[in-house]
Length: 138
Image (cartoon, rainbow, N blue to C red; front, side, top):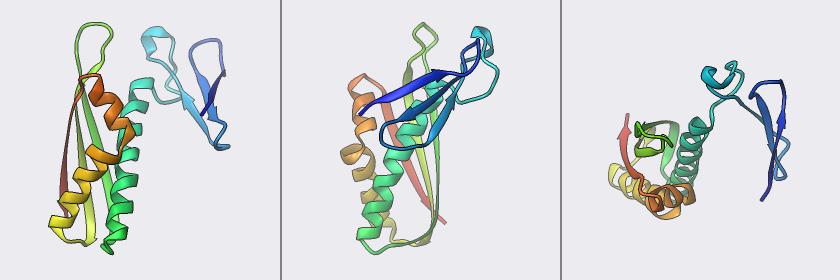
């Protein structure tokens, strides 16, 4: 896998793309380093990667179990240490599902999705990040 970042302006706005798709992602830095709010910041991308990796697996598992998902929402919140580098110390993933879903199956599916199948989880956890999750069914 390979990604490329191309500079868009004289500051820190970049456009990223992957050899796997034609999708472009805009990345920008904080105002302190010249960012102009024209893209997501790198640590936001980490949380987005963890959330999307986990929810993709969760949806796949629940679909295989023939659970009827009407909607799903994910919030990912990370806490960072004060010292530089400001790495994540704790991350919590909150899944909110709507539909005809068995709660026991959903809990087991979430555990498998986050702790067994999500490679982003494994990379972060190997670096010492404490990752938790919760699931709510409406």
